[in-house]
Image 1 (cartoon, rainbow, N blue to C red):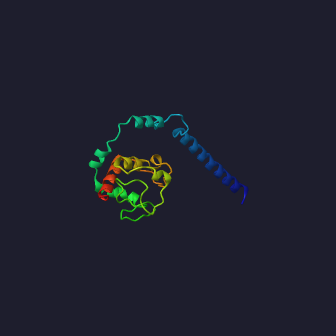
Image 2 (image 1 turned 135 degrees about the vertical axis):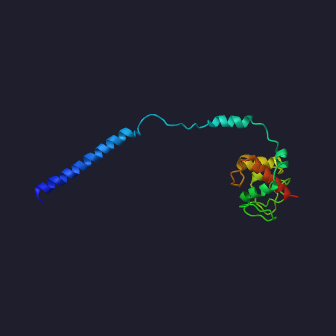
Image 3 (image 1 turned 60 degrees about the vertical axis):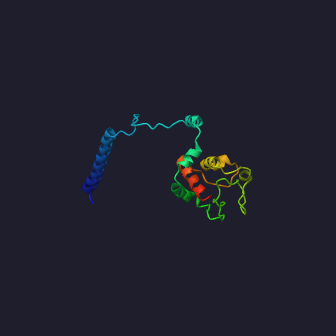
Length: 167
């Protein structure tokens, strides 16, 4: 290789780098991604306001909700419970749930309940409704690891289904 070819080669590389530098400079001018202007904002509700709204909410008429509930829909909701509970009279990870409505909590034979569950009281529709919303919050020390059913309709439908297998 002679000096003339090397000079052309170095010149081509420098020219290409200059073109890339100019393209970068122009595109940064057109598409400025470091400006302080915000395209949109996402408002996040204050958690303390949500707690106050829940405290001000009217009490739920569980009897009316359960009376209007759909046991067939409750059977579908029960599939979440079926991972640990059965309705055939036999225990699994959790106690069987046939006959649960009206039954005293912690009284299924051959099942080891927590002390909190044994002291809970009868499983009325109101008690089930509260427990299904937040098991650990209602019965402290419960072994049940289920997070709960947040939708009132799901809880009412499930209680209506459990009432059909409690008769």
